[in-house]
Length: 257
View 1 (tube, one colour):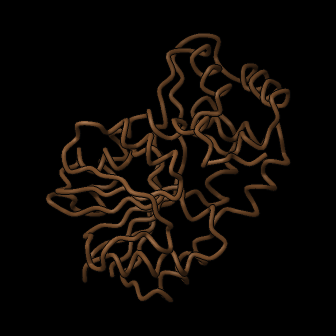
View 2 (view 1 turned 90 degrees about the horizontal axis):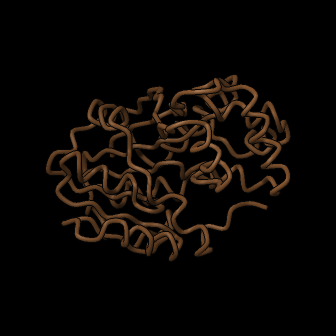
C-alpha cells in the first residue's frame, strides 16, 4: 500500500521536522542562497522551503501536487515572511518563466518515471545562469548496511522485498546526468551527503516515529503487522540506552541553466 500523498491523514508526515545544520552547510557549498529566489519543487510540508529562507534566500516558493501537503506547509510556515506555497505539478509548476535563481528538488525524482519533463520545467523556471539542485537517494545510497545511524539499512535487511521496490524506483547517476544534459543544463556536479534526519531521545521516541511511518514513504508498503515486526527487528540491533542519531545518505546533483 504505497503512501497516499493526497490523504489528509498523511498531511503532516513531511511537515514538522527541521532541516539539519549539516544539510544547510552542504547547500551553501553548492550554491550561495543569499538574496536568491528559490523554488522548492515537491516541497511536501515545507521543511526545506523554510530552511532555504533561513539560509538567507530572498523569497521561497514551495510547489507540491498535493493540496493536503500544501495546506500543511502553509500552517507550519504561518507568519514567515517571503515563504509561500502553491499546488502544481513538477512538470507544470505554474511558476513564471525565469522567476527563480535556485530550483530545489528533494526526494522528488524517484517518484517519476521520466525526469525529462521535470528538468525541462526547472530550466524554464530558472533565470539564465540559475542553479538546479536535485537531492535523492540512489540504490547505492539505500542499500548500505543497517547501523545505529543508518537505520534505513535495517528496513531492507528485515524485509528484503522492500529493496526490490527501491530497485525499481531509485535513480542512477547516469540517468540523471543524461536527463539534465537533454534538458540543456551544463556544469553538472555530484556530491554525497550524509544528512542527519533526526536525533531521537531514546528507543521509545524512535519507536513512536517508526510506528507513525513519519516521513518514510517506503514503510507504507508494510502493513501494520509487518511494521511491528520491523520495529522489533530494529530494536534487537540498537544499543539499549542513549539517543539515536538517525542519518540518511543522499546523492546531490547540481547543474546550471
